[in-house]
Image 1 (tube, helix red, strand yellow):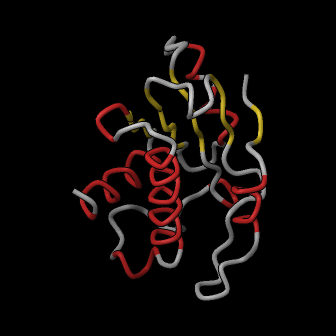
Image 2: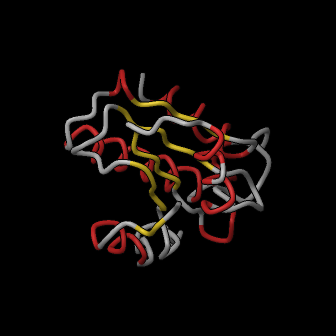
Image 3: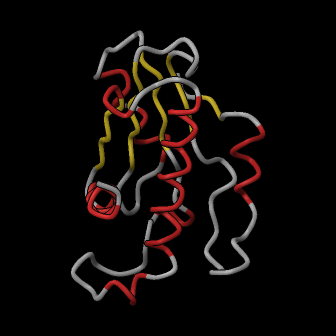
Length: 139
């Protein structure tokens, strides 16, 4: 069901020269409807040690045929290096890089006409922590 989205996201495959943190070249995977046809979007964020492909399996368990599904991939299968209990500064630049990626994905979804009220954020383990931090910083 999952397939790699085209060139817009491939541009994020390069190193972030300011932080040195990398975005995986296969980020994100998508499935379901295209944004311009979708009634809503579901962003699935994997946990530490898992992958976009792994969490995309949830798309089959959340049957919303009119929705677009997106699953970003963290470089090295982790969004940041230490526990979520570590001081924020110790999880940089990974934490900020992941939050920036989520903001970019949500911006693209909204630009395509899917409102935030029709966007579901789903995260497992470290992906859930990343989403919690994103939501706290972007109310």
